[in-house]
Image (cartoon, rainbow, N blue to C red; front, side, top):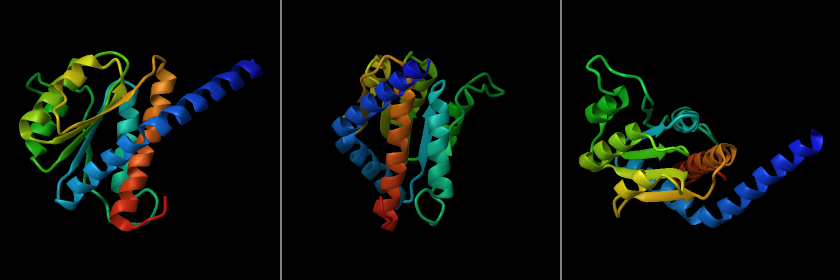
Length: 188
């Protein structure tokens, strides 16, 4: 048991470290897009599918409450991941329709399986002119097809949920740290 656990943890860390080195430029670009949104008085919306919704909520918390240094709260809204509204639509879609404007940014944390709700959210974001950042597995083909030329797709080449969540967590924390660095001069 102990050896199996150690092997699993080593595999998890090795995969994440290899991935992060490969996508570091994309992570830096994602933080630049988010920082640019914030400097234009825009908001960042985050949403995740299934277990990735916890990663989205964590990123929201780091941006609103502060991450590396004491600083002003940043406008970030975690969209509800599956609640239905009173009129039968999805609450997250209604939130985005009511609150989004062209200077805003949407960060999507997708899961290993397709999620039509995320596809609908991304369609609304594109219609509203938001900058979109997709962080998910390479297999999220429907979402990738919707991404526009000015959007960013950070693809994670994984097939195991633990690898995906570990990678998304590292990416989310890196984006939060880079935003603090870019906007407030914190150390990384």
